[in-house]
Length: 113
Image (cartoon, rainbow, N blue to C red; front, side, top):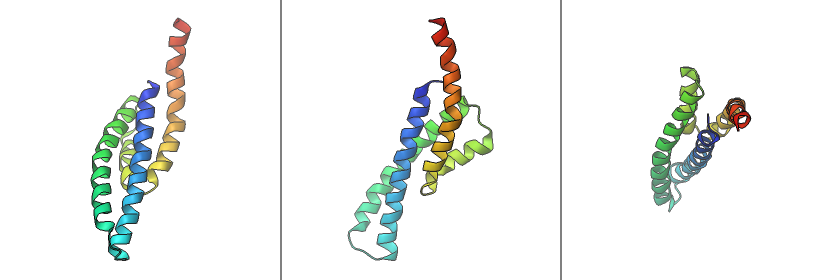
Protein backbone atom coordinates (compact mmCIF):
# COMPACT_ATOMS: atom_id res chain seq x y z
CA UNK A 1 0.00 0.00 0.00
CA UNK A 2 1.25 3.46 -0.85
CA UNK A 3 1.77 6.12 1.76
CA UNK A 4 -0.37 8.53 -0.28
CA UNK A 5 -3.47 6.42 0.44
CA UNK A 6 -2.98 6.99 4.16
CA UNK A 7 -2.10 10.67 3.69
CA UNK A 8 -5.29 11.36 1.71
CA UNK A 9 -7.36 9.68 4.39
CA UNK A 10 -5.64 11.56 7.21
CA UNK A 11 -6.12 14.96 5.56
CA UNK A 12 -9.79 14.32 4.95
CA UNK A 13 -10.28 12.95 8.48
CA UNK A 14 -8.90 16.15 9.99
CA UNK A 15 -10.81 18.44 7.62
CA UNK A 16 -14.06 16.56 8.20
CA UNK A 17 -13.60 16.56 11.97
CA UNK A 18 -12.80 20.27 12.17
CA UNK A 19 -15.76 21.19 9.98
CA UNK A 20 -18.07 18.97 12.03
CA UNK A 21 -16.93 20.63 15.25
CA UNK A 22 -17.48 24.07 13.69
CA UNK A 23 -20.92 22.96 12.48
CA UNK A 24 -21.82 21.68 15.94
CA UNK A 25 -20.75 24.93 17.59
CA UNK A 26 -22.63 26.94 14.97
CA UNK A 27 -25.78 24.88 15.44
CA UNK A 28 -25.60 25.31 19.21
CA UNK A 29 -25.17 29.05 18.75
CA UNK A 30 -28.05 29.24 16.29
CA UNK A 31 -30.58 26.86 17.86
CA UNK A 32 -29.88 26.76 21.59
CA UNK A 33 -28.49 30.22 22.22
CA UNK A 34 -30.54 31.99 19.55
CA UNK A 35 -27.59 34.08 18.38
CA UNK A 36 -28.08 36.12 15.23
CA UNK A 37 -25.65 35.66 12.36
CA UNK A 38 -25.11 31.93 12.84
CA UNK A 39 -27.63 30.98 10.15
CA UNK A 40 -25.31 31.72 7.23
CA UNK A 41 -22.37 30.15 9.02
CA UNK A 42 -24.27 26.93 9.66
CA UNK A 43 -25.41 26.79 6.04
CA UNK A 44 -21.94 27.29 4.57
CA UNK A 45 -20.16 24.95 6.97
CA UNK A 46 -22.92 22.35 6.65
CA UNK A 47 -22.64 22.28 2.87
CA UNK A 48 -18.82 22.15 3.02
CA UNK A 49 -18.88 19.34 5.57
CA UNK A 50 -21.42 17.39 3.52
CA UNK A 51 -19.42 17.48 0.31
CA UNK A 52 -16.09 16.87 2.00
CA UNK A 53 -17.59 14.00 4.00
CA UNK A 54 -18.32 12.28 0.67
CA UNK A 55 -14.60 12.57 -0.19
CA UNK A 56 -13.77 11.29 3.30
CA UNK A 57 -15.97 8.24 2.64
CA UNK A 58 -14.22 7.55 -0.66
CA UNK A 59 -10.72 7.85 0.82
CA UNK A 60 -11.60 5.88 3.96
CA UNK A 61 -13.14 3.09 1.89
CA UNK A 62 -10.06 3.05 -0.34
CA UNK A 63 -7.76 2.78 2.67
CA UNK A 64 -9.94 0.15 4.32
CA UNK A 65 -10.10 -2.03 1.24
CA UNK A 66 -6.34 -1.83 0.64
CA UNK A 67 -5.62 -2.55 4.32
CA UNK A 68 -8.08 -5.48 4.18
CA UNK A 69 -10.09 -4.23 7.15
CA UNK A 70 -13.00 -6.25 8.52
CA UNK A 71 -16.40 -4.82 7.58
CA UNK A 72 -17.26 -3.81 11.15
CA UNK A 73 -14.10 -1.77 11.56
CA UNK A 74 -14.54 -0.20 8.12
CA UNK A 75 -18.08 0.89 9.04
CA UNK A 76 -16.77 2.47 12.24
CA UNK A 77 -14.13 4.38 10.25
CA UNK A 78 -16.77 5.55 7.77
CA UNK A 79 -19.13 6.71 10.53
CA UNK A 80 -16.39 8.53 12.45
CA UNK A 81 -16.90 11.56 10.21
CA UNK A 82 -20.41 12.02 11.60
CA UNK A 83 -19.53 12.10 15.31
CA UNK A 84 -17.81 15.27 16.56
CA UNK A 85 -14.15 14.56 17.50
CA UNK A 86 -14.41 10.81 16.70
CA UNK A 87 -12.46 11.18 13.46
CA UNK A 88 -9.43 12.45 15.39
CA UNK A 89 -9.27 9.31 17.54
CA UNK A 90 -10.11 6.87 14.78
CA UNK A 91 -7.55 8.47 12.46
CA UNK A 92 -4.80 8.22 15.07
CA UNK A 93 -5.52 4.57 15.83
CA UNK A 94 -5.87 3.65 12.17
CA UNK A 95 -2.60 5.40 11.30
CA UNK A 96 -0.75 3.35 13.93
CA UNK A 97 -2.22 0.15 12.50
CA UNK A 98 -1.61 0.93 8.83
CA UNK A 99 1.92 2.37 9.00
CA UNK A 100 3.53 -1.07 9.46
CA UNK A 101 1.72 -2.26 6.32
CA UNK A 102 3.13 0.67 4.38
CA UNK A 103 6.63 0.02 5.73
CA UNK A 104 6.34 -3.68 4.87
CA UNK A 105 5.31 -2.88 1.30
CA UNK A 106 8.13 -0.34 0.95
CA UNK A 107 10.89 -2.81 1.97
CA UNK A 108 10.84 -5.08 -1.10
CA UNK A 109 10.94 -2.15 -3.49
CA UNK A 110 13.91 -0.67 -1.64
CA UNK A 111 15.72 -4.02 -1.70
CA UNK A 112 15.04 -4.46 -5.42
CA UNK A 113 16.55 -1.07 -6.24
